[in-house]
Image (tube, rainbow over all chains, first blue to last red):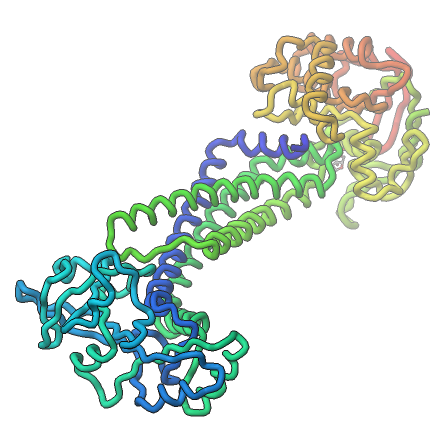
Length: 378
Length: 228
Ligand SMILES: Nc1ncnc2c1ncn2[C@@H]1O[C@H](COP(=O)(O)OP(=O)(O)OP(=O)(O)O)[C@@H](O)[C@H]1O
Ligand SMILES: [Mg+2]
């Protein structure tokens, strides 16, 4: 480290109180920003659970559908039409709907029912108990062992129940990569059974899952589907559509954005104010350095370095603290949705850098204007 | 000649409230000299020190230090001139309270990009010269006024500048300590490769001057030789 920066560090550390206030202020602000954004990213990810878990390359849906939870059923001919589009390797119907489970103890529990194409079972969960072929047996369902599993009374293979006044039996227990956001247990069955057992509208197909022959066929399939009045999206496009729905068409995104901005402003004001006080306290020293022969650019370096040191320390502590809390939350709360991703780490880092640079700038303006003659005159 | 001052004028503010701090000030300074600037309060002594050390730009006239007309330099070059050419002892020392004494002394070396440890080593040697060898690791506020003054002197000479500038070096010292410090400066710091300019009110230390310039109302009114 250059002597100049070492000197800057010593000046910074010499005022314990302000140094600690600065680091705590930024830590707190990073902590809040991280919690807000990780909650947001977590919610977004979990809300896309069905898209991720089913794992189809392309999805065909009614153009008004925004999320996998709210599908608009499509008539049967759409499946045939999609199958006849050149470039489609295969296409299967998917049913996603809600069912009402009547438990043995007399209570009712809503559940998400996913009906998989009978022939291929495309999009099925990984089984941790039971045999997938048992899904073809009478009244068979596969239950997903996620945090909501207990709401069905933690059923075992062979447990019977009633769903929408039909008999159901657990034929297997499965696992999926992303849990549902809405705290509902998920039951998988065949498309045929799902569409027979659950009350439905005239049309039955929620989504059509499409496997294109090659990636080059994707735009063709999208264009062709559009011609018949439906929307074909790749899984990534569908996730993005789902994201933007939660971000911009629900209050969720806006509120979290506002909270994140408030955390940023709180951090900025604590850090900016304290750092300004720190510079004011040391103005005489910076002035003496200037009189002795330090250039303004060197003083700028020193101050910027000081504010960055504080910023990075606060960032580190803030990330540690928020990671610890998120990890603890996941341990204790089923369905706790927060995730810390590179994205929100990066966002928090950018905000901390902005805080550091603005704080430094306020101090720098002051230091640049010091007239060494004033130091001389005392 | 290390320093030549020619027809320097410096004023503050606008007419009619303008203060003339320096009027047509001219003088020269040789290597090996210890020049005193004395005069009543407000006569322009600090202003003159600032103008000759590259801190305050005069309104007219020229200041030449070792052949260089310093007021033709830009801001960064002036900073370099101060860093390499001038050693300052400020009236209230301006030591850094949370640095150790030896780190304080090393500040001009640090600004000159001398490596940290090397700077500290050199500063320890200088502290020995000013008689503070055991005090290097203490913070300066643990030292007495006279000791702090010597730390400030050590800091001014550590980078071996040719021109030393002392503003009221004895103002906050008792008479005896003040005399001791000036005697020390004259005997140990002053040599044939440098010159020292001292601003003072304190007539008890006049005996150490090579020459005395008397100022009044921004003008040089009298110019006397040593010990007069
Ligand atoms: N920045 C300034 N703005 C306006 N007037 C100033 C400024 N600096 C100095 N002066 C005026 O210039 C004159 C000379 O000031 P200077 O500080 O050089 O005097 P001095 O001889 O050092 O006095 P003292 O012995 O009290 O330190 C004074 O009248 C002072 O008020
Ligand atoms: Mg003065």
